[in-house]
Amino acid sequence: MTLKWTIAPSNEELAFLVEAGVIYRDAGNYQAAHDIFMGVKTLYPKHDFPEVLLGTVEFQQKNFDGAQTHYTNAIQLNPRSAFAYAHLGEVYLFRKDKENARTHLKTAFSLDPLGDFGKLARRLLEMTDLVKFS
Image (spheres, rainbow, N blue to C red):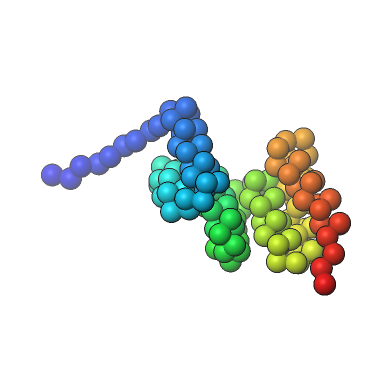
């Protein structure tokens, strides 16, 4: 006999999972954050947000290649993901690649000009203009 699991968390339960992952990530417990976000990805494999969250774990560990992979995967799942474009632009900024940073941040801003991800992209664009790389 094969068991088939069907789990459909409520929006409140999903928000709790994501918040727990963010708290672990921000506290430096990257493995716990990764595990939680992988669980969310398992529940929502066709959504961009778990990929972006996984990317933020990699980014905070300065694994920019890993972060870029997750953000790119998120964009493949949702080509209109301002969330992913903003974070991808941030990766390029930290890699000192202003041209690609601007491209992705402008895309994020155009997709979400009044929302949180557009605001993040705008702030990062402003920072891109101020930063001087030697």
